[in-house]
Every structure is written in C-alpha cells, then in structure tokens.
Image (cartoon, rainbow, N blue to C red; front, side, top):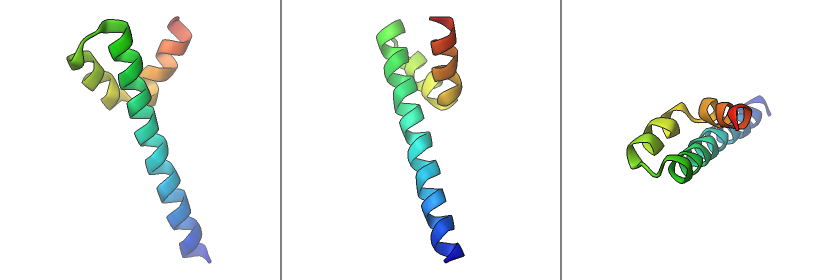
Length: 56
C-alpha cells in the first residue's frame, strides 16, 4: 500500500513540474516573443509563473 502511494505521488509531482514548465514557456513566449527566454523561463518553471502573476 505504501509503495502504491509513493508511485502516485511521484507521478503527480512529475506532471506538476511538467505543467509548470509548459505554462512558464507559453507565458514567456507570448510576453517576450523569444524562444531563448521561453526556454530559460521553462527551466525556472513555477518560479516564473508566480513571478508573472505577482508582477502583472
């Protein structure tokens, strides 16, 4: 039972990180229209998303 919960948590965290990266990249590209910035902000993931929400 404990192993099953760990697997579910791991999958959820990976999906959350992936979604955060994609969201950051989309926001960045639509704002700055630069693939370089989009990649950089994608690496920052949720940090950039939260920054964008607070700054705009």
